[in-house]
Length: 496
Image 1 (cartoon, helix red, strand yellow):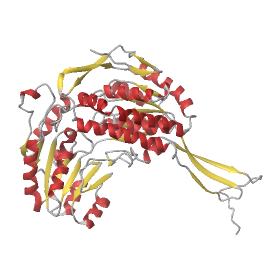
Image 2 (cartoon, rainbow, N blue to C red):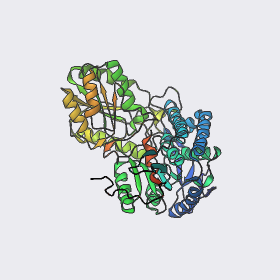
Image 3 (spheres, one colour):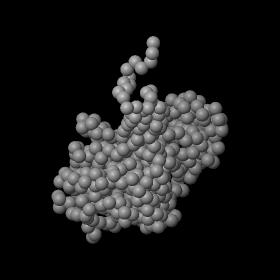
Image 4 (tube, one colour):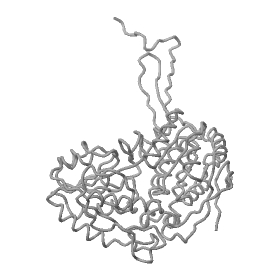
């Protein structure tokens, strides 16, 4: 069994704790990928000290030159796309078609970030006084702690690391315990592309130990966290107390709304992909399907037929459409919510069990599951499950659909299928989400647009696009007075 290491202070090193955890393939738990460090606070202390040294040099590197490093990262990811997709699928289970997309998102983010190295715009504005310039510019903040989830093992780390690095910060990266191999490969590529070794630190380990130590460390100036809303609340409390800049991207309970005038073929493909892509393990996954009564029965019938045909299996086999859940705890959580749905009186129409196929016995598989006659306000309809469970809700009007969409604590993504342009544009305004798709599923964010949500989904910051560069940098304002005399701004300079 291969033993992996942390990358701290420019070297691949064993954890100070001397402890490791096993990383197993969720499609076949007899397949052990390797042992990875269970790091502790001492490892984080060393990583922070190194990152602080790296920051002092990296921040003086011109931003276009920092972007050049990330352009090389994009080139390397392009060359190794198939290799990285394969190791990601082995590690977290989703089919190769999806992990190839995960790598492509990292590639797109790399090239976008490389260009932003020449576009860290400030503003030059007129001064209210004569012979005086007034301007702002962006400057780096310090050491950024990046804590990432399992479901996008490469894409989400690139969303965070690339803007952080282009803006001139040093990075401490802790990947989720379920996907440490992808995290290691990512750091290896950053180093091969020419990133100075003390600018990136890789600390493996448990969130409640290594992640906690990063969040609580006084030498880490800002935190970017993607994970559960409950964990995000704890992270937020710590960062608030320590006056740290914080970006949170957390849960979702996303709805696809289908109205009577919709293209049902398109809506069917959208909900299949949105609900069961990545085995429902996306913060943007379609967890609720809100159907207007006129098309409810037809679309539900067609959806059931297609769902029952979905092929479960190892994501590295090309015929597989739905892979395993990430671990046994995730599968048990799905099972608990199926029990809740039955107890609440919803109709379990398909799925709702572990597959009977003996070939799948060694993996964390669960059949795609659909409940109908789900009541708005029920736990099944309100709470995030993070698995292949879809709740179908019948409504009479678009207004009722909009109200049900908004009546959850989350606000990440929403989707509306309609041919009515007036209703479509009203949805863009009235659906209480950070992202709304018209005639497309609830999943499908693009690298050059901001990503994030409202309410319990986040804290107002965005991943991706241009806004994330504002999170990873600070505004500095400069005034240059070349009048040769004292001028007093914000005094009454206007004659009466």
